[in-house]
Length: 79
Length: 220
Image (tube, rainbow over all chains, first blue to last red; front, side, top):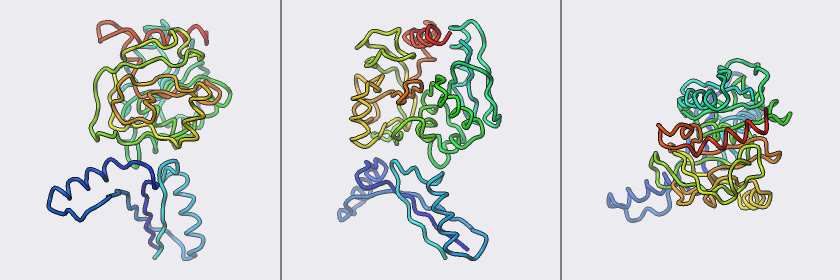
């Protein structure tokens, strides 16, 4: 199975990189761009075919290492 | 006082810490490689600055999972002193030995300069040799020193006298100008500025000496 984990900053946590990207896009002639938030995409290959187990395992991976839940949230996508 | 310095791949202030500890205690600290799961019998563990594991994933995230950190956690749980400097502070928050997180500097730039700090708390093994409210100058050198915690945690840290150092002029956007904090049991200190770089006047100042002296007086 392939999984994708999206790690992003929690709402309310300042994202200086996102802000800089937003400013740059505005400067490039895209005034329609409002707030920008930057995150990470982590792709994982997971052995086995039990989707529920894979999802639970990846949740544990996120809690233990992939995300810092003090400042970040995550979403898991399984294919 | 017996001390150990943890060495991760891409630590780069481990030798500064060794020089400072050797100068202040009169004996060289044990240098402990991150793959070692056993710590020698020491009073103080220093987690030095640098870019452990190349700052992959998040600063300090990989280091917090290394074998030696299990022993550092056990040392801290028994009440042993732990000093995390710069990347060491990031490792301590990632290990949950200290609350909060260190984020990208608000100005997005790596900040490398001497900064003035206010000693906010002298009721600790690390700072009893300073005067309350004293100004000290320590260097900072970091890209991710912007301390973040939710308001309830910040209120608690302040209420319990756990904010030890505050920036006189905030260089990184850190919440409430926080430069260094203590754990609940007050035996773990994490700070972004570098006290180990100011023990010898030849390298820019001596304001860091009192921190090591405080530890020696408390732990010896």
